[in-house]
Image (tube, rainbow over all chains, first blue to last red; front, side):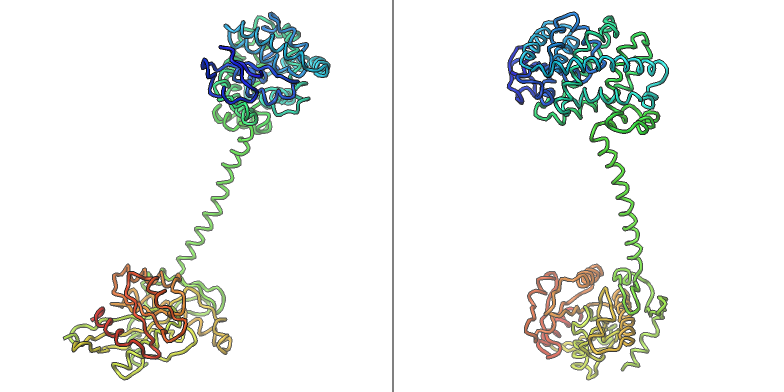
Length: 391
Length: 196
């Protein structure tokens, strides 16, 4: 029972479309996901799951690095510890569960449920995941710290725009992004590895991040997760979802910077979260140079639009291509029109093309052609006499 | 009666080699005893508009006087190589090509300036759906000129008058063979009716 309504507890089969428009029973639009098998399916499920704990998507996505903070708090306080460790491939699940508590303040219960469920689910998973998870976790933690640092620096020292340039964190950013929205696309191993750290992070990062901040970070996370949740969670369309998510996220970077600047003290999480989200935009969509250039001049909305994952390139391409197409077309058209204004076109000696309409419209009387293309216009009077001559 | 009035100038129009000059000569000979111009199987034989004035046509005891203007065949492309097939030297072909082009320009000009009605001659063995035909008929219609469609060369086996009348159902189509003089009575009836 991969999906369960967090409100009424109704269970949905994996890939069920029923819940796309909310729980048919209670209308709830939060569902939790517990993988029936190893984490392999996670990718696809993440999407579907997202609705339940829409946080998943975001959670899993946000969770990755930044989210960890908020989620981690929850985790730490609650049963989470179990899940992270045991979470082999189902790292996401753990995240999801983690995220949820953050999302729903009321959801401690739900969260717990989810957590326990996740734990159950995790029991299936293999030792594989575990080992990987751990090793990854260690890496992840380091990475997270590093990230946090660099982000903090960035947040404090520069405006948001500059982040892009700075993004020496690029890799981290990219990681984040992958973990987040793209997680689903990643090969299972990658996924588990990337995600696992997150789930594991709770323990370490929590400390570094500071549990106190949990409240704040969780909020942003929630917001994003909600927004994602509002999207029709197409379980089957795992591919589309990732794109959607990044699209939404783009806007965040713009907002986030301000948050960060406002409360630099919170830096650890905020930056993280910001990275986690901001990263996706610049990352997959465009290269750093583009992003920086863009972010300097362009409004958040535009950034958002441009940063949509695949669309971005497409969109850009579309914008440009039509223009380039138009130009040749216009030129051709103009040329064609010009040609048409020519009543007689000398293609080659002895070869002519005539524009009947233009000839018809000409006020001149009779035209005689010269080899060099000149016309001789004769006066009307010559016509009658000559006719007489012919007689 | 009509001789006092200004005779109506009827332009004989159509694509090259439709039999315009043959028709013009037939009419002129029938009613004046003279010919208008040389006929030829080679396209663009008529490269200058030729006019026969005061052609009096008697129909049902009534006289209709018209000026007949035989015009060069109208086309959108003139290529001297077309004439080389008719045992013509290149220089001659090139010159003929240039003159034919001038002739088209002249025909178009007269259509605008100096024609009161149009006899549109088509080779009924040819597909009437051409750019030239469509454009010329369109121009004529836009001028509100009275027009008769003559489906010529009905003496030929593969003549298809119906195809022509189908192509221009808004106009009256008169079948004839100008060369053989077939159906000329109806031709004159229609001319008197339309242009008298």
